[in-house]
Every structure is written in structure tokens, then in C-alpha cells.
Image 1: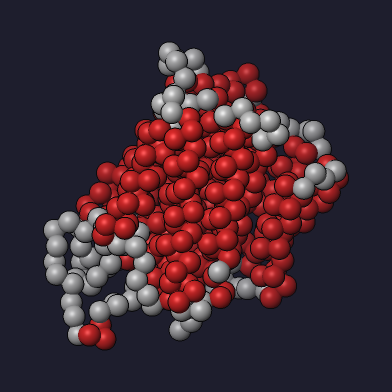
Image 2: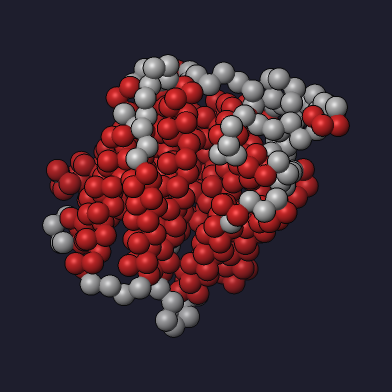
Length: 404
């Protein structure tokens, strides 16, 4: 079995020494996915209703600085927390070497929390320093075991985190009023980096999870599609960061929509409809080509760009995130790889939120604000369900007594 499939089977790092982890009652700091999935879900459940209330004019004063501030917190806050928890867990399995646990892991989480809190204060310089420091700290934490094990195939993940830190620095400098810095440039770049992560990791694990989780399923991979899919995501990052004509954006987006759409079709998602733990990943990935197609249309000036953007954020990020948070948390806590009614409810809530956010404003522009309110409530409710359901899963030891 290759190093990628080992993500589904956690490694017992103490097995060679004949050791067995003590049954500690509190296991939150044992592995990266535990605290980061928990704080990310709580943050999503709380932050979105506050943003919706601010957007609708119900909240006196500003929780965050407008739509760009909202975008920053969901990308550099929520999404980055989930990515960090996933990578700290995955790198341990890819390399067979320990990643941050205990005090070092708690310190990483503390930096993330401090950044979220400082963002609400007038201490803008301190907030900027701490916020930029977080992805750099995680990059170092995963780079060490990757380099020690010479796992060159995954060296690009620390580099992506450094790239996110650089984009966050651009955002923070713009927020501080430094001339030449552009908040929108930083947000779009970060969206593209997250898209690259989802494109790569989704391509690696979704077919595997499908084969393992759905008896009789036959997901397929085509070599050309597998090479072109990440190339399309990287190409989009390049044309977004380097001033490019609209026609080039449209061409790259249209190509990405076709390639990634074909990739999803090859996975045969219709075979997964009776397995919520699997179909949620297919549904989330499907939003990526939908986003690319809609953004191509938006670049042509036919629909508003924010509607297309939310196909990526509310749709792809929302569904893939909650799907991976449940699938990997179950696998790494020794639980059955079957979604219960709480998880299925959370998936349906996120899916309904994405459909509402993207298509209702497009079809009925007169109720744009109302659609955002409903979508935000559905989205936050999904992550509230996750936080409540997974609190015991994330804070208690594995059912099989293994470390992690």
C-alpha cells in the first residue's frame, strides 16, 4: 500500500517498541486534526451568524471590516485551520514521523486563536504579526518531518503555506493602509491556493475513499486528467496573480471546468448515493468545476463575481471541509466509517446553504440579502451540528486504544 493510502490507516508509531498509549481521558492534544477541527467548527458556527447580522444591518457596529474582512476570516481563519489540522495528521502518516502534539500543538492552536481575537481589537499591527505567523509556524511543523523522511512528493505543501502567509501579509499591509498593497489581490490568491489544495488532495483520496466505502463502486482515473487537473488550478493562480487579460482568465477557467468536470464523472459519483460519508466529498468536489464555469461567465460580465466566488467558498470549501472533517476524524479515532443521521443532516445543511447562496440571488435578485441570511443560518447550523456531535470524538481517546 503506498504512502497516500496510509491516510486511511493511522500508524502506530510506538508499535516497534511494543508500547501502547495510556488511556488518557482527555485526548485533544494527541494529533493535529483534533483541536483544529474543533476550533474551526466552533468558529464557523459563531462567525457566520455575526457576519450575516452585520451584513443585514441588524448588528450595531462592525464585527469585521466588510466583505473583504469576512473573506479573510473564512480563508485565513476557518479554512486554514482545517487545512492545518489535516496536514499535521496526514504528514505523520506519509512520513512515519511524529508531528506536533501536546504543548507544541497547543501553541499552534493558541496562535490561531490569538489571531482571531486580535482581529477584533484596535491592535492592528499585533493582529497582523500573529496572523501571518500562524501559517509559517504550521509550514515549519510539517516541513521538518517531510524533509527528515525525504518525502519530496509533498514538499509543496509547506511551500503553499508560505505562499498563504505571503498573501496574508499583503492583506494585512493593505488593511494597515500601506500603499501598493491590495486586499482583493490577497483574497483571490488565497482562494486559488485553497483551490489547489482541494484539487490535489481530493484527487488523491476521494477515489480511494469511494472504493473503500462503497461496495461495488468503480471510480476511474485517467492519466491525462490527473496531470491536467492540478495544472489547471495552478494556471488559475498564475493568471490571477499576474495581470492578465479577461480572455485569458476565461480560457483558463473554461479549461479547468471541463477537466475537473470530467474528473468527477470518471469517479462515478452516482454510485455513492447510499453512502453519505462518500457522496458529500463527491458533491463538494463537483462545486469546483461549477465554480470555474460560473467564474468564466462572471469574467465575461454576465453574472456578478461574488455569486461565482461563493460556488467555491460556500459550495466546494463548505462541503469538502465538513466531509473530510468527518471522514478523517472517524478514521483517526478508530470509529466505523459510516455517517450517522447527525452527520448526514450536517451535509444536507451545507449543501442547502451553498445552493441558496449561489442560485437564489442569481434567479431572484430582489431577495439577495434574504438569501444570504438563510444561507448563512444553514451553513452555521451544519458546523454547529458537527461541533456538538464531534466534541466527544475529538476530545476522547481512540476507541481501539492506539495513539493519535
